[in-house]
Image 1 (cartoon, each protein chain N blue to C red):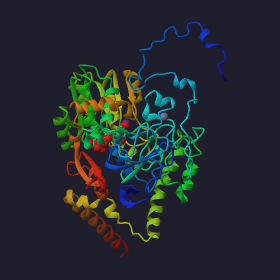
Image 2: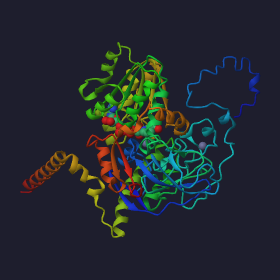
Image 3: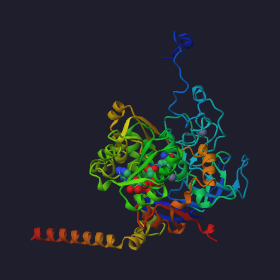
Length: 384
Length: 160
Ligand SMILES: NC(=O)c1ccc[n+]([C@@H]2O[C@H](COP(=O)([O-])OP(=O)(O)OC[C@H]3O[C@@H](n4cnc5c(N)ncnc54)[C@H](O)[C@@H]3O)[C@@H](O)[C@H]2O)c1
Ligand SMILES: [Zn+2]
Ligand SMILES: [Zn+2]
């Protein structure tokens, strides 16, 4: 079968690889019909996540058709059309039972600090992912959810990560009616967080980025107030002034470890790897939130640690909330939002690319070329 | 040392407990599950068919695990070494980053051994760069060429 093959930083291609096998009684094999590239994949692609092995297949946002099921699988049958949450979760451990499906304790042998994630290095469990024709899906009775018959597959594929992550970013912000929310990052996650902030009653939603076409998009898609930080001398000071000198009620970091905007952070974090990527957006979030305010982090950071102004967190009495999105917990509500037309995820897809052209797709998304917001890969069997 | 006193007899125990003071709401549907320790009924165990490295912060392999790209060669040796250290340690992560870089070279050698010369330009997606950022690409190539020529000229002049 065709599958993405990671060859080292900035180098990926499609190769023939063996068809996946059932390795556990609750496994399923899914024939992929859509698979996205995520901002998280860029951290792998840029070589920033430790234990990313050459030869691995990435891809944690995918939907497809159940092709085969293991002997203990009860909830799925061959032929079902399913969306597969990016978290691999057992449903039985203490954490899954508390609906912390992003923090399962029975899906990642290599690290206890993160649950298993499809196609996301060995630090997240060593699973080959969905940027392929077929993929092994463990715990088939827990994660995969049958796609409602009336749902567009382009909406469904975004429900496996982008929508729940953006939604949870807003949810963790504890947004109350009347709040001012500042979102750093106008990528797919920031865009969705902006859209979802309204669902929680925000009065004002501000998005900060340095890429004009993305700011233009989120302005229209999510009615957001947008600012390009390249044109702001000091983004924190600007936000203070814009919020009556007090700061925002809620700040959301939807950027993660490859933030631009500070030479010092870029040199220590991205060029010399002295910290786990650059924490510029998180810095700005902490410094521009109100006293007693909330900083919600969904941007991904590496395991070694980052330079952030923790003293200000203490002195301002800030609450920090963060996690990998718990996709399964949120799906029922989010499916409803999509069906009721309150969210229209597929509008953020800008590129539909044949799986065979994966090298170009990664490059376009990484370099933000051709006004790219969200690329979706389509395997040959799903194109006929 | 275990605390052996009957904690519920401590004067004032739970007097100020406040169930609403739960900063994890609504992410975590609080139960007492985690207070019971690692005692849940585990899913059946997947049998290892390839070498799986295991965090030393857990007692066992997880019930399922990925079997992609098992450790091999020099990078594999470095990875095994890294897993002697816990996840909070640089001894764990820095060798893994080193192993990733070694692994990249191993990947090229592997390709060549199998008679495949990797098309690094295509793998890096430069077709897309040519299509969508032609000026940028040309600029980059020109700058690189001029800089290289200048360095050569300088070195040549020095030798004379
Ligand atoms: N927690 C989760 O469950 C989860 C899930 C999916 C993605 N993520 C993470 O969310 C982050 C965003 O993902 P994405 O798909 O939108 O990625 P993306 O790369 O498309 O978007 C990131 C955006 O941030 C902008 N940016 C860079 N520096 C900035 C700064 N200092 N201030 C404001 N904006 C800045 C970039 O220009 C870009 O538009 C990534 O770190 C990704 O790994 C987390
Ligand atoms: Zn993702
Ligand atoms: Zn679990």
